[in-house]
Length: 103
Image (cartoon, rainbow, N blue to C red; front, top):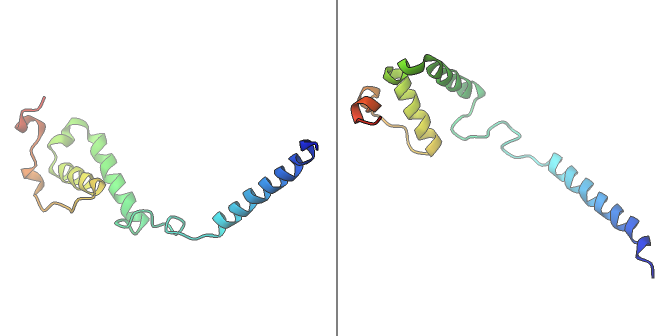
């Protein structure tokens, strides 16, 4: 028996499985397709505002390491990234590199 005649049937079955799985994936709904990727950020404007403020602090350069607003923003962003609750610590009490002796 020649196995070459079964190759087109195998290819047709493979293509049918790929098409079926693609249709199932495209018709399924989940949170990512609804635009809610992160549960803490319900609106795109919140993420845009945070990103814009972080970019502003980045563009400030070394001055931002002494700016209390940037220090608080970085601390909140770090806590959000690590999944920790937001700190109630004022930004002025956050130690800087000069105060902690880190070089």
